Length: 173
Image (cartoon, rainbow, N blue to C red; front, side):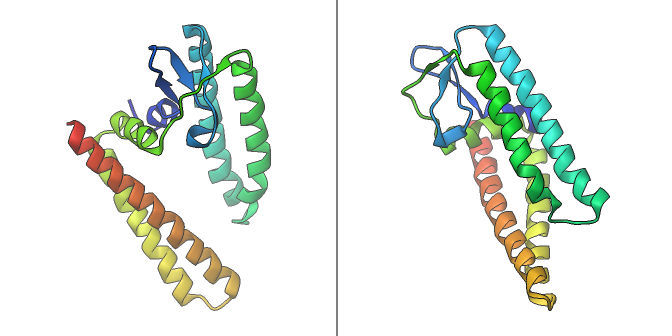
């Protein structure tokens, strides 16, 4: 397994009756009880396509256009793609009363990644946070300082999550 599998797995869990529940909006939404393995398989395949497409477009389009903020313009169409793709596959499924917690999400992601991968992502995240702080303090234009500050906040939060995942991985073995 790897990072992408962990991301996909974090949207699913077994309920108290052993049924697979899909959480399209993660911890903030209701789950959908999947009645059969085919629906789960199709949802997992959709999520794989979606995450690969989203990652590639969010990474490549700003580079090709030379405008870093272009990724913001990609968010609405990516959300629409996800909303209709996941919604179409899970629309006939009954709603679950069980919630998905952030702890379950991060534990599933930690389980799918090696300890080395988690540590590598933590180092990269810490470097990103340091670069954001540097940019916020170094650059003169306010816009660049705000981008640096936003990057510092984002990577600080990511670092905290990764530290939690490393600790969760250590507890599980």
